[in-house]
Image 1 (cartoon, helix red, strand yellow):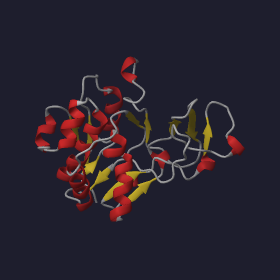
Image 2: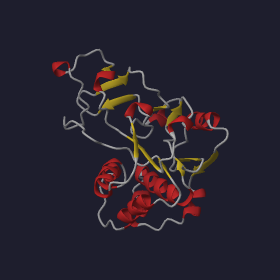
Image 3: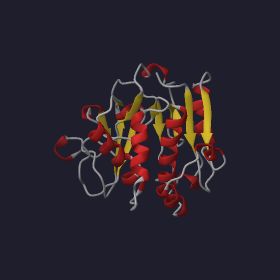
Amino acid sequence: MIERNLMQTWVGPHPKPEKWMNTWKEKHPDWNYILWNEETIKDLDINCKAFDYYWEKKMYPGVADIIRYHALYKYGGFQPGADSICINPIDDILDENELYTVASHAKDKENWIRTDGLPEDGQKIHFLDRNNKEHKDSLSPIHGAKKGHWFIREIINEINQLTEFDKPYKTTGNVLCEKMVKKYKPEIKILPMHTFIPRRTARTTPPREYKYIGDGKVYSEHYYFTTNKLWTSEY
C-alpha cells in the first residue's frame, strides 16, 4: 500500500489556487500534506536537463511533471492536481496496489453528454483533440506510487536521457506515461477518467464540452488552471 503522503506542486509567478488546494487537506486530515514549491523542491535534488529547460522556458506543467516523479519516488504517496477541488476523500479507492494513474479518455461514453446542448455526429460521443483525432488510451501522469517504485525510476531515467524537448504533455506528461506503461507493462491501477476528471473540454474548433452523468463516484473536479489561464479570474 502506498504511503499516506498527499502531495501537490505549485511553482511559477501566478498565485496558487489555495482555496482549491485546501479542499484536499480538509478531506484528508490524517494524511501528511506536502506542498512542493520553489523552496521545498530543493529537497528533491533534481538534476535534469529537461527540468532546467522547462523552468527557463516558464513551461511549468513540464516542471511540475518532473517534480511529481521525483517526489513520488523519494517519498511515495498520492499527488492530485493543485488545480482541482477534492469532493470525496480518496481512501476508498486505494488498495494493495503500488501504482495508480487516471485515464484521460473515457471508455464509458454512454455516461457522458455534451454540455453545450449540441448533438454528437451520429449521436456518438467523440473525445477529440484539436486535430479532430479521437483519443484512445491516453493516461494522466502517475498519480500515486509506493516509495522507490521501479517504474517511477524508469520514468525519471527516461526523462533524464532526453536531449530534445517538446510540449510537456508529450515529453513529461500524458504521452510519456502512456508510452512507458505500454513499454514496461507495470502492475498499475488505472482509474476511470470520471473519478478525477468529470468534465472535459475537447480542444476542437469550436470546443466540445462534456460532463459525466453516470453513477460512478467522483473524487475531484479538475479546472486546468494553467491551460485555461484561470489566474485572471476568481478561484
